[in-house]
Length: 160
Ligand SMILES: NC(=O)C[C@H](N)C(=O)O
Image 1: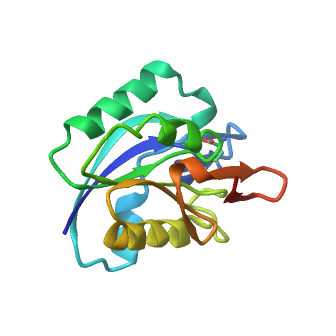
Image 2: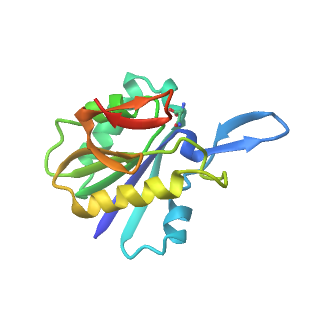
């Protein structure tokens, strides 16, 4: 099994710079987390952008779409900010023959109580078992991309 990972930014990849008292988006954390998980598959990671998903625009989403469409691999993982994950996922619905899973985190992977490792593991499980289609793996569940929303108050994803 080979998984192509595209990172786009989001809280998952955020780094806290104390001197600046603000967050910035660092390098993709996915490889480190996969190493920590001692995974038994091959993968490659390509960083497409380093943005909070609230700042993604149509041009960014077109790039994400076109990169995936042109990718020769069947299994695609997208790490993405949670706030507009469903918007990006909706734009991938026309891509056939691939298992595409988006995941992210409510807390930066670098935080001790982060949900990042858990969510990434869930996404990898989804890639191992799902039929071709677009899915969001968050909150311990794998949702079809068109059947989920983020509940900001509760801090989790749920059926819509
Ligand atoms: N948890 C997150 O990823 C929220 C962040 N604002 C984003 O959508 O990029």
